[in-house]
Length: 106
Image 1 (tube, rainbow, N blue to C red):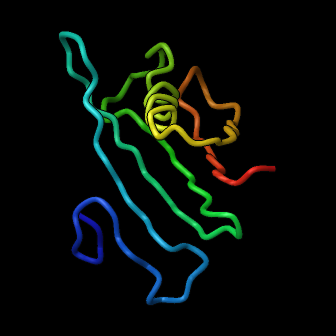
Image 2 (image 1 turned 120 degrees about the vertical axis):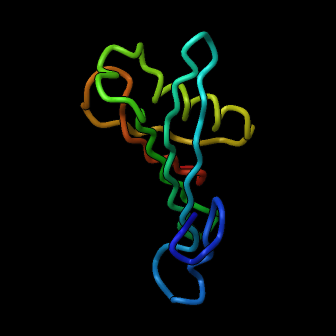
């Protein structure tokens, strides 16, 4: 639930900020354990569309050696959308990396 009272995403356009939408989703992994990961989104306007920033984090402590599950969460999501994007990662451990996904052509 967002602060604005909506489930999933909130519309921030009435507040005249540099972000149009914020959102959050929960991803459940496949396999025996069914781990859950939280994915946060920020969507900003861009002259040719939108810039989407996304970050995935495990909901379980000690997911240090998760074989890049959080990276995979974002990669699968944005690949399924079938539009061009750029991925920028930082240097955090393993595959648990924040991403800036820019839908605009460079």
